[in-house]
Image (cartoon, rainbow, N blue to C red; front, side, top):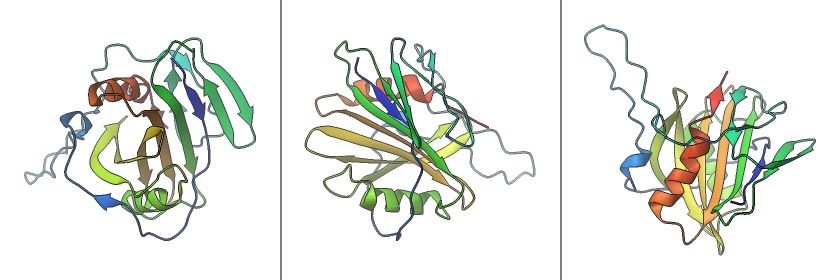
Length: 197
């Protein structure tokens, strides 16, 4: 499997961008609880990838990603650090995950996750056109907006969160010929290990 993982800071621009479409798969649903009308405490939302059977096991160094406590990738990956990123090249065994970029920022995050998606869709440089907005997902109890786009060689999945104080971006690229099940399994192996502080 070839995997490269980078850690980069989020950017900022205008809020135009992503198109909203109908949900693509049940695997991407958040499972978030509806607000309680009985005065009882709300249940913790169920993690989208909480039942992954074979999560990744190799810890990623996260010194430059504020607010992220842990994330793991596949054994045999190689790491390269630079001032704004950690790049991980995975074992070359024909897998379909080509890249993972994990970033955070307290300086230039958008006010909402939806605004973060619109910005990313227009300015990531990874997409041929605007991204489709899919069902949100829940990772370590945090709801992330999910958007998907394509370019000539890969499918790009962005999982984004922003609350005006901190923003997170988790971006995967996978081969165009991957089925939805293969893509969700590959992404889930990493997302099941992601922990926020």
